[in-house]
Image (cartoon, rainbow, N blue to C red; front, side, top):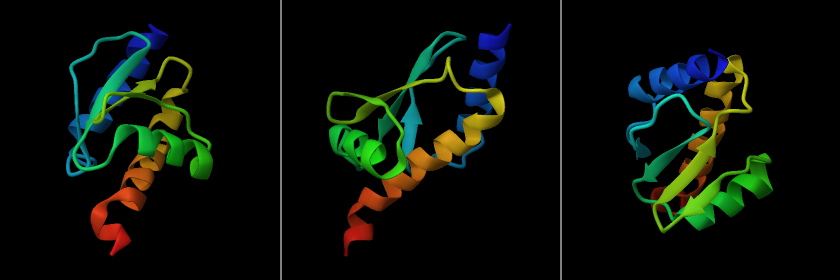
Length: 98
């Protein structure tokens, strides 16, 4: 039940449109992790940036995908987590460097 609540919260956040300019997400169910498909930022570069600047660990898979484990994140901490990932993406977007 806890895992289902966490997965549903992640789906609600991702379906809200708040992050749709930054990434798409792959279908997932109540489990332990989910994957984001980044629009214009390299996954490994983002992984390193998130760890260094925000203390957030994700797994890069290929050039555009990151894996986020939500199984250990409390439901109320989901939005702050995805907000940090979004901040990291925005830091690295080409327009941010101009």
